[in-house]
Image (cartoon, rainbow, N blue to C red; front, side):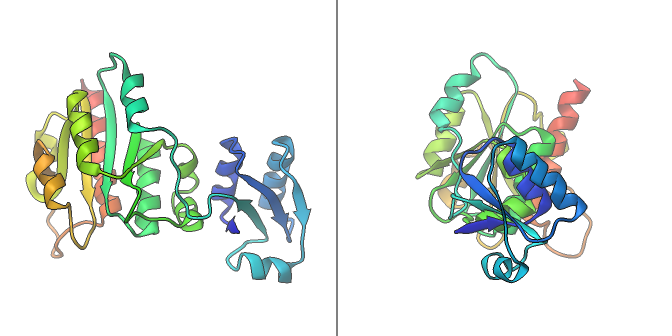
Length: 243
């Protein structure tokens, strides 16, 4: 079994209306926990009182409350890429992130949180070699995992090519790329983010229309991938607001 323990993670999972959760286990009824219990009751999710010792064994990082979830590996596929493209219709602006081997669940969760805040329409990841830890992803994303649409695919290169056919410009995030503020990032835009160790795979990089970077003045090589995602997504929002 997998358990969510963060207050935000539990709250957003319940609010999302997902049927793949419950019961809610309660050991300590503090003010915040009581709010979540009320939310669970209103959502018709069973609430079980348990002892602190029992909850310690099930969810060691709990804060007096935990929600059982069924997506044990943390994978979540809300929509296929084909469905996403079909549903775009004649919409001009759309924003997609392609995550290439982001295996750290903390980074993956932080990226999802940025996607929620800056209005990304879809996150695409490989169904192999991607982060798969429901509790860490949900907690790090502060529950944004329940709101950001995600699609998994066996072939990221093919996914990028399908997006290009649908009118997307594909930009690879690269510290040596052209500064993002000099690119027109309005319209249908997709960013490819690679792992901090290996970066973007060669075949996927070759599929990009251009590389974009983030101007920086620090002593270390680059930004954390989740921070870079936030900066790039903000730049898209900035440009759209300015137009």
